[in-house]
Image (tube, rainbow, N blue to C red; front, side):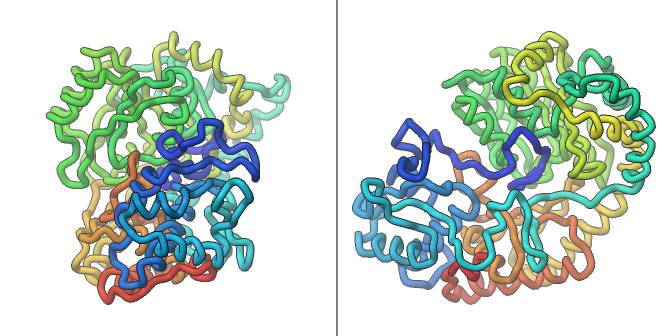
Length: 512
């Protein structure tokens, strides 16, 4: 969803993968239905820190609801083995009966099954409609799915497809496997960086299958098992997933929706941990919408240079500015030190799977050597379309700006009027609001909203180490009737879990 999903794509990282390195007692991984990953009581208890918040239900019902939300969000994976009742009870400080009854409730609702020799194993309910979290983003028509923050296709995409077809005969003369990128597209991307104050040549650009693919490829090349890796907290979920999967030991620095980056913490964390890689979103950060101040940029780059850290700046949301002027690309201040990641999907259309890496040719060569083990190139047709569109980026952004402003202002006004107790910021751009709830009930609120037909990602999805139960990311990409539906569903859900604190047991029917 940049998204609990959402930013970039490709490379097979389309679902939110839990922190297996943190959670597993077994090092062998999930190898089939009879050998599940076993989750430790300590790690599950860490994810369940706020399991009683906002619920007057019986303890076992509240615990079952909390586990159910973790499964829905993907923080506990399908096929994982839950800890023994006695161990989890001790870790949570409750009676074994409470845990036993919660497990029984999960079995009743189809979220848990018992396997001989493996204990209690997470499953997805089979009755009723399938859970949208596990259909690669495909949801029934009567659900408002807001897990991904994205706009509909920009004007001109269809025309760009038609123009791109003129170049297809020439492309067909080749074999179609392209790991570097179409020369015309790379030139257009380089020209765009140059116009924004970062002189770039096509030899400094490699085209990828979306921004997520670019991040995953960088992680695979730059990170070795046990390497410290700096990430922001909160951050884009799929980024911290692939960095952890590459073996990185994540070290986080906080980003506040209003205060941005604490420069002292940023400097001290980098110099103390000496991370191999630092993954940052300095412009219109996802999910907070914050933009890094010039002084914080200097602190980041100076500290990174002092310890030899490669800085990866993700600009997937960065050009979607509504108010004010955009900053120069971070690499403009340190061209050889900062790797830029960009994407066409937020500006033009999510179905256009085109991203890129802007870096020194030496690093790009390493990426190209590593790439064939994961993919054999970026689709040629997508590249031809992107080659037509990228030169129009400035004009498309100007048109998008009006739509984004209307969406942001409309949703901010509606939420502030209907839910005045919430802290609803008005970001300078991006696609989402990072709302402060005032109470640690984000997961419970998301579960309740699902019973209203609205699908959101809970705040905890955006935390590299969990948390953020007091926050909720709400895309402002909706308008008209969908906005009214969204705000109405959130208000009613808030009455259930925050205002009236009514019991909210999440049955399988309520979830989907």
